Image (cartoon, rainbow, N blue to C red; front, side, top):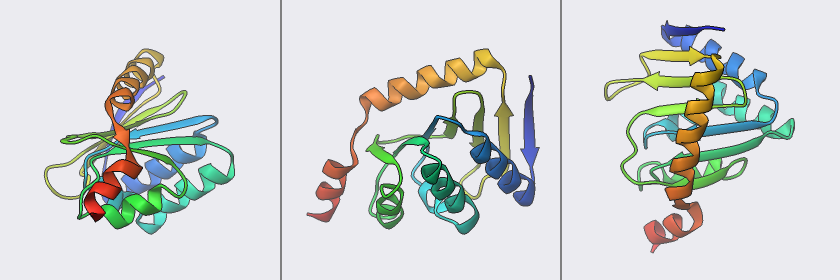
Length: 146
């Protein structure tokens, strides 16, 4: 069991891909409004597609805005998507691992990874709290498009 911090664009992308490939059942992401654009970049997007093809249940929470609406609609093709306003920070948790992206207004600069069971359980609980307070993507998208 370990908790580590990864830096460097290529290393971060590689760790995200490794994390994505390790998911067996459930993938839960709670991310700020910039991350959907990153999530739909080619390398990361492929991980979502592969997970969906493996039957992984994907739940994704973000602040859906006019700026990320196109990417959110793409995410909704393979994930259950919900809207939660004013999210800051970004993390993802599976049944056995946790990652969090650290950034200061630009691309992810560092990635925290952990497979320590207590940390994973804690992040799962935080995700569930956010999920229960989020609204359906459909209603938020309709609001933006009207």
